[in-house]
Length: 299
Image (cartoon, rainbow, N blue to C red; front, top):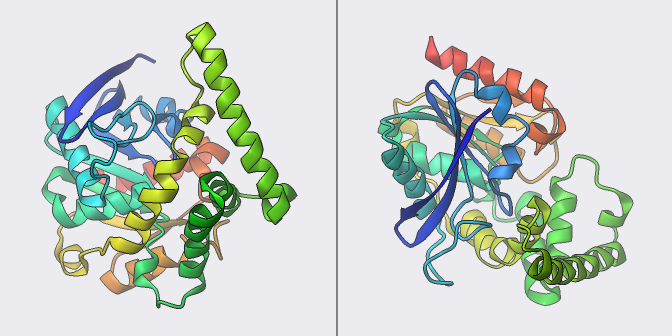
């Protein structure tokens, strides 16, 4: 499978973009902390039928902001997707987003529906659509508080426990998360020293850890607390779209928001096998379910 990689200039950032395959365009948008590599297991499974586009979102991994404090809001990131389509000469595309990427999909449906063939918002943590005292909102607020009071690596360990399908015991205890945070900091330092000698590119895990500060300090508050989806625009769009949840995600803070949002807007909430990162856990089963949806909208 041939993959084309380029750096695309957008307003306020340069985006690392990868393209593979041929056919209608399908953009895969990663969630918080992730990048294009999050979808590396399913891209080959989709590239036989689609031009699959993945990218590192602004400020993450290989997509630097032009200024360190530059905008990273949901609206800007939705416009980034449109800019990628413009650069590639693509009029309309299917889009799939997971977690924070699903929130960007929601904004695309609200503001840029004319550029979409169809859209799937898989487990958006839109606790904004839940009551202020909801358990889901409190869980995300606790992670944000950990970041402010104990450091971003402690918060990232809690974030990992929230998103992993079956988190090991060490992720579920306070002292275990302290150990994980310390090990992560040491790993980043040793990795930087090693790369200064070998000149090798950072691994995908190193990139994810490097995105932690942006995720915890800026994206989590921006996406999950400050952003307000335009329910009127979403309810009035003609584009075919849905929210989605994983069979194994019941009780997680990104499960109920997808159900509530779909019910409020009168769209379907589709079920996928696996949990929050099912595209990594069971890529073939996940791809089969996604293709079923896209085929329905293509007929």
